[in-house]
Image (cartoon, rainbow, N blue to C red; front, side, top):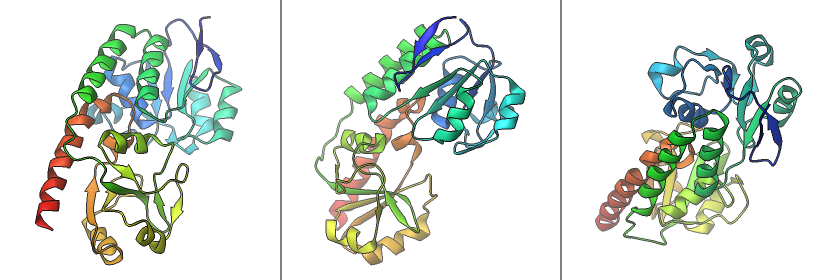
Amino acid sequence: MPVYQDQMNRSVEVLSTPKRIISLVPSQTELLFDLGLYNEIIGITKFCIHPFDKVKLKSKIGGTKALNINLIKELMPDLIIGNKEENERSQVEELMELFPVWMSNIADLDGATEMIKRVGELIGKNTEAEKLIRSVRFGFDALNIKSKGLRVAYLIWRKPYITAARGTFIDDMLQKCGFTNVFDAARYPEVTAEQLISVKPELVLLSSEPYPFKEKHIAEFKAILPESIIKLVDGELFSWYGSRLLHAPSYFEKLQNELQSLKSQK
């Protein structure tokens, strides 16, 4: 069987053309569909919501961090595709004992396009993957950021507050937007209201996922940071590292334009 390297530097033996694929990550599920697979995808997580018309017909094998191992065994995949950050290590290691498991490990745009390339090779969709990568690169290369250096805090959770900091894919996307992350800690630190006040963000972005921040939460942060701009953002476009990257540059430009307008009103 062909041997492929995953992004954790593991060698994974896979059938030359996998026919029974389970995806453990929403952004990679969408990627598989967009690269032209359908019948080959036999299992996805309950958080895999795109493309809606296709994912609704697929078997759900639990959540990204709470997989239904028994159901996965029953489905008998010849390939499982997961992610180091989004899936639980113990569950992934259990699956590795039974099936070929290819893992991504992504912290920036380069890592995302490398994942797309390798997944394309893995599933026999090299041409489609290369085309997608060119389109993603073109979009980011053409990204027109008019205002740079705005100090930002990006919140992904509430009670406790959790922010996306250095070394995360979200942080790389913030940099692509021209923002400066106010938190230097690694990964996803818990922060208090007092810490938010001390770092003095000019902008607070409230993500739509994994915590579903809504309009009602804006007042909560406005009370803590009355001088900051508080803005709800589409978390998928900051954190999904598959084919949804095609839509990120235009969203980032739109966000920049909205912020310019909000700043002028202050």
